[in-house]
Image 1: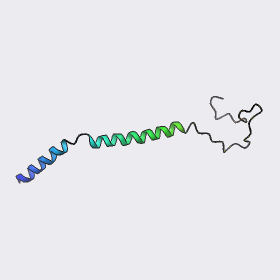
Image 2: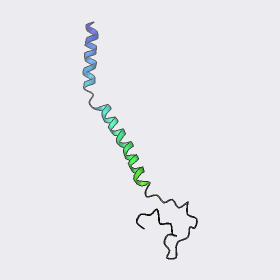
Image 3: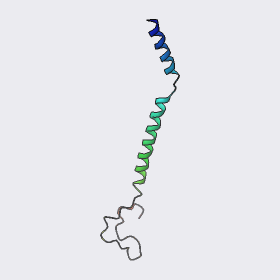
Image 4: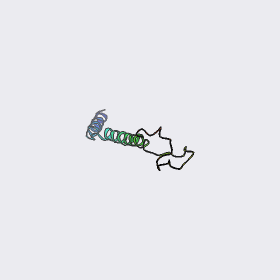
Length: 74
C-alpha cells in the first residue's frame, strides 16, 4: 500500500507544478474565437451589397441612384 500512496503523492506533486497550461489554452481559444466574431460583427456593416439595385446607374449628379435609406449618413 505505501507504493500506491507514494506514487499518488508524486503524481499530484508533478501535476501541481504544471502551471496554468489548460487555463491558458482555454483563455487563448476563447480570445481568438471572440476576436473573430467581433471582426465579423464590425466588418459586416461595411460590406456593400449592390445586388438588390434595379438600376445600377448613378443619379443625375453621379451619386447613388435614390436608394439612400440604408445609408445612415446620407
